[in-house]
Image (tube, rainbow, N blue to C red):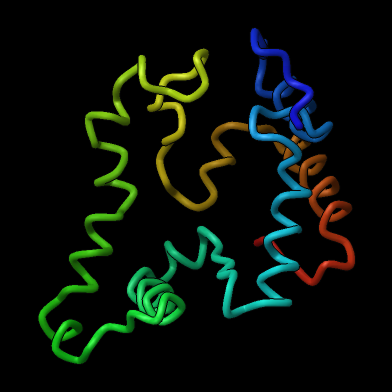
Length: 156
């Protein structure tokens, strides 16, 4: 359960980062949720597939195949040759999803204080460097290392 008051507002990115590290988010205890899914994906890999954004960005075609295999809906050679996987990857791409009209509307967000567009920045790995300072990044790195300690999960 989130400790966040419905009328929340942050005056700065630094304040948001501090609240995030304290577990104060609209979506509850983020790290606990991530670690639960990670643990389940290791205990029951046939039931839980754990993907990382960097992996999706690195090789979307391989990750689409991995997801299809996981759901027992593997692509046929014909589908691969016909470009079905590439079409799915394009349809599900950051560029496509971030430009959907529903994601540009301000009244549709599940969080009243946020526009749907706030859930999309650039979709680039490492864009965090444009949002937080080096000292904030170091603090976050230490926090993440502490949270993931002993889990086997690595975020790079």
